[in-house]
Amino acid sequence: MKGNFTFYNPTKIYFGLNSVGNLKYELDNYGPNILLAYGGGSIKKNGIYDKVMEILESKEKKVFEFKDIMPNPTLAKLLEGRSLCLENNIDLILAVGGGSVIDCAKGVSASVFVDDPWEEFWLLNKPATKAIPVGAILTMVGTGSEMNGGSVITNEEEKKKKGHVFGPNVFPRFSILDPTYTYTVSKYQMCSGIFDIFSHLMEQYFSGDDDNVSDYLIEGLMKSLINSTKLALKNPKDYEARSNIMWISTLALNTLVGLGKDQDWEVHSIEHQISAYTNCSHGMGLSVISPAYYRHIYKYGLGKFYRFAVNVFEVNPLGKSVDDVAKEGLNCLTEFIKDSDMVTNLKELGCTKDMLIKIAVSSDIEQTSYKVMTADEIYEILLESFEG
Ligand code: NZQ
Ligand code: ZN
Image (cartoon, rainbow, N blue to C red):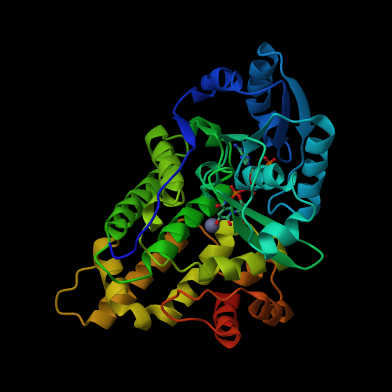
């Protein structure tokens, strides 16, 4: 571990079957006014809304609804939530949903205290000095938003989707993770979330080359994810598999496994712009461009790609060159994507050829990648990913 770090994660996790029962105890810590943030209605169909409302009512809370938070939440939606908080003296924002709902709730919680949240946080990257407490009930797995300070917001006017990482005062105070709450997620969204997790692990793994314990943790999480994915695809109600995936997802982006590492995040930067243009599902955007991106950069981190092949995908290195083993590992990644029915080309996400250059020039360039990209290189990667 060459890098210094401070590790502080204040989110309390309630994990497991019926863990929603803990909500009633948590509610004692907050005043009467609750902003209930949720998405387009899945929680009404699967009964989670009724369950949560029953608990809120038993605690005599006054509920203000902040609904229809869309996948890839927009700045306009965030400002709507901000107004609701300002008008109603909100004591707790309770986010019930996936990454989009939780991200939006966290963004709102800090935006209440500033005049121009987009500029303050997403453009100028300033810390939030104050925030309304947020609690989360997770219904879709993938982003890790339930235990981190991330909030990814799309500014539709500027065609820019951007993440901001808030400090511990914006992390959810508590998050409730019941794996059975994810059973009603469609196969498409389940696979999208799984690739999002895999990508978070790769973004942190493919960076720096010291003997870092974080890399060993990541390899273990990747192997467990590959194993559990196979089982969940066979039987989406395999509790052990779905619970493993849920916890791997949280561990993959609660800041633990990135400690002491540079980290990359270029795949995410490119995907965010694909999403800004197509409104695609985040994980599927990542699954489309990852193979081309890693083929493009593997030579700059050859030793690590060799290690990935051998330790994660169990490629037998005997009698093969380092380069061949590294490439075989990347082929295994592509196979994993195909076998898991993830999307493999940009066309399928609604991307048109004339969008590619716009996506390339508007993608943020990360400075800690094995190979720092140019807009031309991003364009090449997009072209390669266009037809798959
Ligand atoms: O809106 P509803 O009706 O609830 O439907 C949602 C949505 O359509 C549905 N869904 C969620 N739980 C369900 C369910 N359907 C049936 N049963 C359930 N139990 O799933 C759809 C997708 O939900 P969404 O929240 O958009 O997915 P996800 O969790 O993948 O979140 C994606 C957002 O998170 C951002 C992404 O960029 C994207 O905006 N990210 C946030 C990060 C963070 N905070 O650290 C990091 C990630 O890299 C990512 O960028
Ligand atoms: Zn992600």
